[in-house]
Length: 152
Image (cartoon, rainbow, N blue to C red):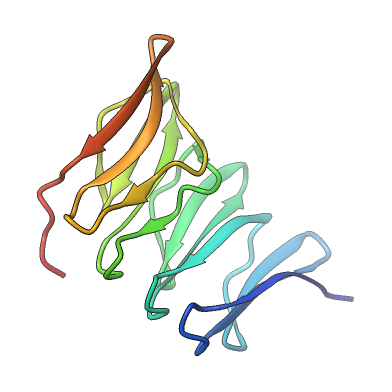
């Protein structure tokens, strides 16, 4: 028996995604196509225009972000509810832990390390920058970062 969880449509209504669990394996289903098997799926998101899709998966206690069907690097943890596309959908980021350091990865580039980045606070802005709330040395920080963005 397959358990279907968290079904939702893309913002433009053209795509449909959910994840299904059969036994110990979880697969993301996107427009009826089954993705690779994982131990768990944490969260997923469509770009604002619906053309791109990303999710966080767990395999062997390591977290990976899958963006447009391609697995990224392994992390000790990807912070829940930080998957974030820019308003135009061209850029993508998330917060992750490697060891004791937590940082935002934006278009594959790691930002400065913090002790923690708060879940759900990563937001892309229309000027190409992004913002989030972090903690460093027990100090609460509002971070606004303007990366050197490559054209996509």
